[in-house]
Length: 353
Image (cartoon, helix red, strand yellow):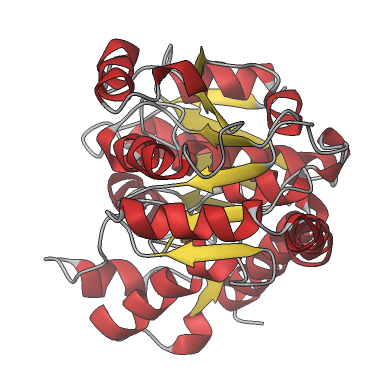
């Protein structure tokens, strides 16, 4: 199969990661894959690093070169990952036997827009990165349920070796420093726990984005937990960083359309305490692989963490269950296989088979 992936975001977001890791897996499965991205931006650079062929992102006004590219390379399927590239895919495929798939793996709400009916009439399949996104498509756009398929992202299990728990109780959060990731609520939860668990530590892993590390340090100082917090910044070795933690926390107050970090914590054999936002209630099995709490609620976060810290046997069992869950449901091989199954169905529909 010859496939063109359209990714026009400028940052290495969850959406871009979903698209590029999937594309790399599809390529390894023997298919020819091209990435259309913005030259010089992070997805373009990451695509090159992953060994994927790239072409510059086209525009609706400059559609002719893209249509020529499709013909010259016998592209069979276009996979659009954003709303703007969806329009581009449909426009460039018109009059050609090229299947169009729309993948949605971002947190923006699904709603009908001008032209939505036309776009989806010329779209063969829709991939939703989580069931709550799929349900939104069926409800908001009234698409037939058979047309929208949930495909969860996968994680490379070989990257994660389950290592023994650290001696000290260490909570970890791996997320960009951004208000939506809820670091402030985790720091407040730590201030609630510090007297009951005097040996507790928190590792904050992630690069600055919409919050400066200094701002979070100031919050920690005000809460008198600064001596318990280690700000590690960006870490290239995420599995190694997770291995040094006892519990993984996702304290997000929004977003999380895809939560790679939830799968990574479970692949590392660590229980997850997560908020009930986005896809997290679908990925984290409450009371089995971790605990779910309401967002924007530091006391609830503290209670969940305390429940696990107070019961090391339960904590370890949840970590083991999380690893099994990823092996059974969220492996990279399954991610690729399920995506290719959707592609096959889209091609058959396009060809009238």
